[in-house]
Every structure is written in structure tokens, then in C-alpha cells.
Image 1 (cartoon, rainbow, N blue to C red):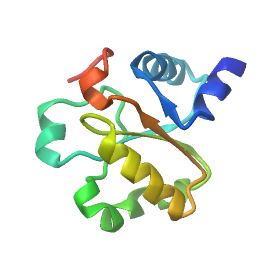
Image 2 (image 1 turned 90 degrees about the vertical axis):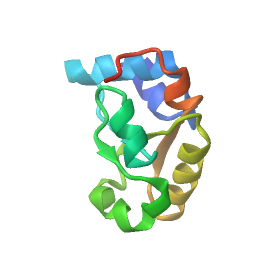
Image 3 (image 1 turned 135 degrees about the horizontal axis):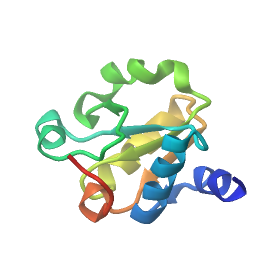
Image 4 (image 1 turned 120 degrees about the horizontal axis):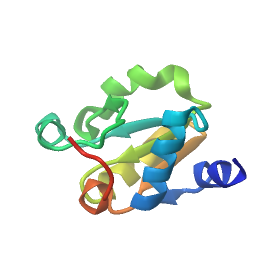
Amino acid sequence: MKELKELLEKDEINSEELTGLLCARQKGDANFLLIDVREEYEYNNKKIVGTDYLIPLSDFFNNVKKIEEEKNSYIIATCKLGGRSAQAQAQLRALGFNNVINLSGGITKYKGEVS
């Protein structure tokens, strides 16, 4: 459990760490939101199984309302390579979200289950 909490308090995680967190969440041992900030056509082509929300960075401020109630939750942001999710991480923090984590390398480096 301590290891899970430490992962959720990092600024950035890698593919293996996200896979572990998703497994732990499925067992009820971890609680976080996974958001994808790519465009809808990218998301529809390939997505990480377990993604909770699609909030495209191109229209981020209009769509961030979907998770407004989650300001104190752990949030993991992902995109294709990690750049857009890093931008979303900064924007979320500016909006008062306290626990935002970037997936390093994005879905391109992700080795877990995708659909």
C-alpha cells in the first residue's frame, strides 16, 4: 500500500507503474482518475483500458468541467508521447487540482492493455 501511495504522489510515472496502478485500482487498492488529453479520433483509434475521461487538450477548459469535483483526487494524464499531458498537468494544477501525474512517454510507450 505504501508503494501505491508513493507512486500516486510522483509528478510522472512510466508505463509499468501505470499498469501496476490500474491493477491495484481494479482490486480496489488504489483510487485515481485516468484522463486522456488526445483528440477524439486518436482516442477512438487506440486507448488505454481503464481510461475514465477523454478531455482533449484542444478544448481543455470547456471540458475540464467533467472532473471539476475531483480537485483532491489523484489524476493521471496521458496523451500520445507525454507532451500534451504535461501541458494538461500544468493547466490542472493552475486550476487548483493538487495531485496530477503525467504518464511519461504517453500511450506510445504504454505496454499495458489497450483497445
